[in-house]
Length: 268
Image (cartoon, rainbow, N blue to C red; front, side, top):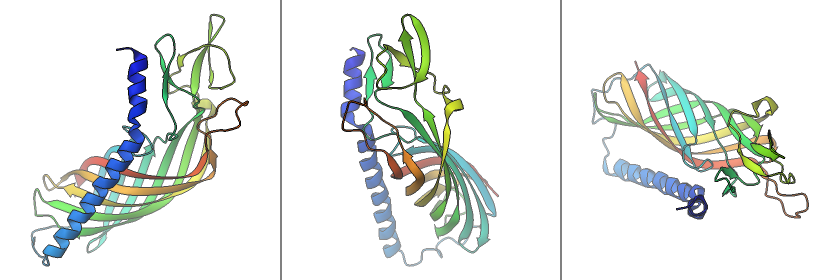
């Protein structure tokens, strides 16, 4: 099977749209199941009398979100107990945001690159908020469900998408330019172009459910399912076609997504 056929299949799959729908319906499923459980169990919170409130916890994990394709990035969060059923929430995330019209291309050498992509956008999110205990677990190996409401500042790293061009047999790594007629050898290393990056400030808000499994007293793992909204001080250009074209891909200053974090960590 040639690279062209593989790339065509990937693009036809439209993974971002598929993931967005799948994640959304997964979130709705968990919310509905939780509401059903609450309505059928009036003694929730009294059922487990052995639950000991942890004073703090730190966890880290992998992010999957509807704006990034497969793996979106990473996250870390810290919680500290305030009072009954309530915790401070401090979080940091770094993820990748792609343009919804991005498609993969393959050149004559079989090298893969993203056509018309001009910038890579990597939001760094610093968040503060509250985490509310909704469902107390058993002393060991119990399931705990928390509601997270948080927001904060974002610093988006806008990095040029670097391409390796062929200039009459001489290789040059330059930012992608749709009007550059030189043959494309392939995409450059991800780490190329950071010296030309710009920081775009913004704000973010999120709401989520954290479903945690306390495997032992001091260890925790689970998933966080939620939605996020963020806005930046300027529009982020991620794609551009030739200047001769009268229609350009849309640039955005606001982004919304649904996401899943898979995490593990420690508490005391």
